[in-house]
Image: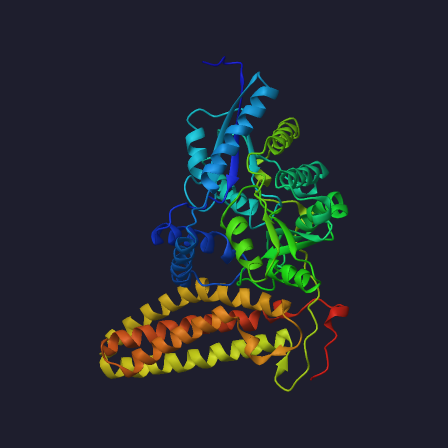
Length: 510
């Protein structure tokens, strides 16, 4: 029993929630959640495609993990971290009742579920601890969006505004704890000073975007700063210290060098001993344990020491508890600004990179005009074909009613789905190298959508498994939606005009 006067603080440890189960369904649901809640924040992937991508990723992970005999330890480690953190906090503030909970971003328990539970007996304060090294839109940014939605739903009225513990990667104390952890593990492995002097230390981190969209915090700045701080503590013991990134494929140009490239470059210099430490992770998971090992396995090494993440290391937990208490003693949270990250870390709009001149290379505004013309011509063809089908299969009165319904549906879809695609593409055309080849008029996901609906239109046109009246309705509705999209292109071409700057100087044609 606790006194009514005892201060109650809920500390929510935020993590990915990677499933340990190897079955396809668990991996599929986890992958689908990541694609819809994270990847689509920066990559223009239509939502109806994400189940296919998640199915493929789920199959790959199931196959790979089964072959490797691997089960992710992230969830039990997260529970151990929460337990250790609670012990540290309770010891430092015995007069405070701390309620430690693990919150997952991509599988239950989600943050809104935990907040609903807290509402039954609201705490005095809520401290949110992202269990990530660096703040970004790909880590704490996901939960910020969830908190914004929770606030806007009106459910947050009797809950204190959560306060984030941020800046871990900029904290020099954290870099010292990481460096001491590395040195402790090396000593436990009995690597001599002479051996280390002929070894490379590769510090691995989750990759991020080199050129994120405007308004996105990619974590690159904080991660590189943290790497530099750790390197300064350890570089005297090694022949070389390198950073290595664990990249994905979607979203744009990723950070360089990858772990495999850092390893190969070290190997080419004659270095045959490697210490690998996944410094960009607070807890072991498939990326820290498996992907780095796979990438470094491409080279033959005399000796390779894989270090774990700090997990629930006492020194790490002591520092994290200190940071939690510092935030608890700091400024109060504010539900009004809960979705805002650290302003100076957010990507500002920049001039476009220089492209290459050529007969079929154009600037963003010209490509936007081509896109508008493409949608217009395609829309005109579909509407004309739909009208001809309708006139030949329906009575005038029924045709008028069906056409009116098709116009309504087309206008609705055009003003929502197609409009969003057009506006996103205009902003993309603003950021791509100027000039760019004509095929860059649309992104790869958009071309996939075009081919899909183009193929669907051909099937509808040349087969008769649908009544002519229904085919007419579909063609008119889709055509009208594309007309609306073309309208938004023509109206907002100025959005494709890049910022002027020295990077706009075009390279000569090769």
